Length: 157
Image (tube, rainbow, N blue to C red; front, side, top):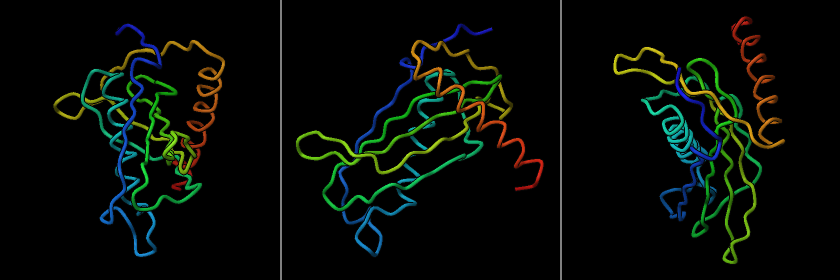
């Protein structure tokens, strides 16, 4: 069994300066571009936690809360919220950062990543040490989302 890790051990933050190539025809950040960045950040968090290759198994929730425009800085922060035997749930929050450093949430996503070996077989991941009440609440929320995913899979949703 691999030794457990803390949430802070794998937190990942990535920034992007939005350019015209990131925008849709409305002049806002293209949702597909943001989804790609979210998947990358979640993958890095999972890789850091598992110390292994990973693959995305599910995008459980993706909520657009606001727009981002050209020349704004977009910041993505990913953290692990839950682990199973080989799976990990990752929360990625996306912000627009103002010139004074103030951040506004524009997206929140939860993804499920699975640790794999070189042949693509699932492998065991370290446990997760929960140190704060917020981390414990995230774990409980992840347990509820996991139950919902199982129910939706049964219903071929």
